[in-house]
Length: 403
Image 1: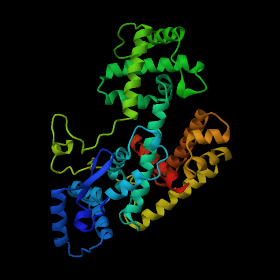
Image 2 (image 1 turned 180 degrees about the vertical axis):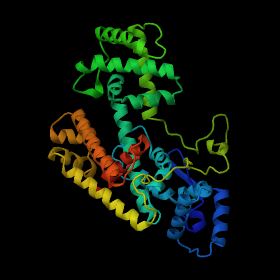
Image 3 (image 1 turned 60 degrees about the vertical axis):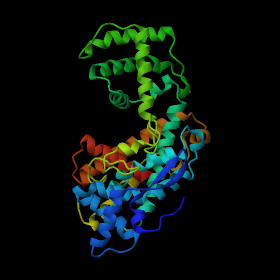
Image 4 (image 1 turned 135 degrees about the vertical axis):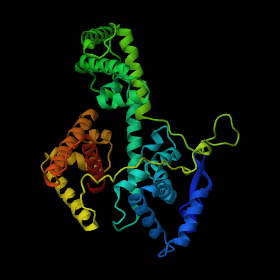
């Protein structure tokens, strides 16, 4: 990969791939014009990437009308950082069906999330911060993909939450009545099959005929609670519904990754990116307008107050971790600090992998509850569902960076 030399190139060009290899740096004409104009117009402009990365980050945070162009410049700037994060040190990449270029596409699409999470006034390099974030995004993507890929259909159904299943079905375009029927069928499956599940949940076999009959009977008994109950269903129909649920869940949790540089079917020289609107740059996912990841926890606007509250959040979490039992503390250290997989932890502790998964989930829930209560009592934040979701993201990022 030929490194970019000029400030204009750093903030207006994007990597273009052929298969899993870089072919060239592609120029975004609109971003190049914007960068040249700002180099002339900004009175205190300096010929350093640090100045311009901070400049565009602040404009992205503070000026709604400049968010799209600023996001384009910063996505261009972080291309090399994302590339090296994707091509180095991913222990699960060789075991997955993805290439490093796929991981690059997944990570670069999360630039808006990275910009939300980092205060532009905080000292330090955006590249360093983004590099760590990209590695975490790729690691979690590959971990989730590997987990979903290893599960049998029935093991995956028992691992799903109601929320994830509902989201998967909604994303597939199913109407609300059909989703309600499928979710009820899944609930009956979970109720009837869970007591006899295999210790190896990933490879759980299909239910036997007696169990399918019990699942169907349970569904037919409970279907009246649905807004549109419909007719009674046979065991075969319930089984086909659950197979559909599995297919949509895999597509939702394990999505295919398509490069914008991929050739468009039916065209010899046209790529998917050629049909994007003018404001959409190569390799850039233009996120919706949204507040900073920490906005629900950080109420003061000045930098000093923000840094103080970051420290308070850290202290609150350290106190909550100290209250955990030693086993849970050791588990957090192995998973977040030593970066071991659940399977490696299970082998080291001589327990089943699903035991590690459940213990981790329970430990995270305990810490989330503690941080939510602290936020409510200390920062006087109302705990809406969106706030709890943001607090959960803050918790996960803190565990990944501080443990």
